[in-house]
Image 1 (tube, rainbow, N blue to C red):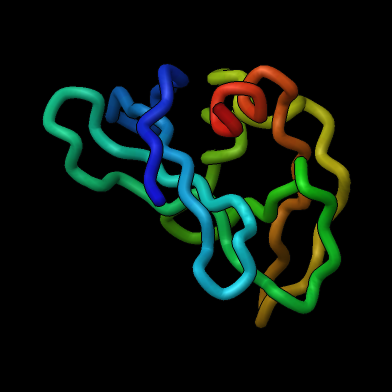
Image 2: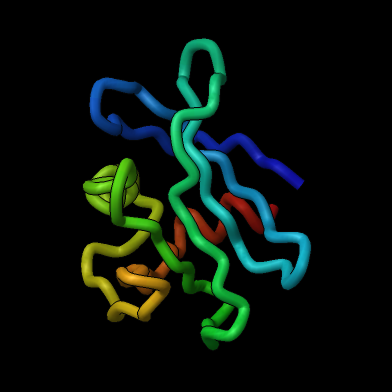
Length: 110
């Protein structure tokens, strides 16, 4: 399931639209960014770590490598709250534990 949302942000030089999806192995939320004009994929903002316990309104954000700064884009768009919940290890780095905003949750649960 992919759902194009009305949430937008600027990530690097791209004007992006936020897409909500679910991971097939555990139905957790996934977030992708697509170009707002031609819908080409820009970034996968989330990461799925099935062994990490999360609430239904929480998500793991990939903030390393090519995704550096993506959490600020998602905060500006109103997708995740401005206060990170913490970090969890993944390989040689960490993933940001974030809370999805009530407005974003309402949109994607329709």
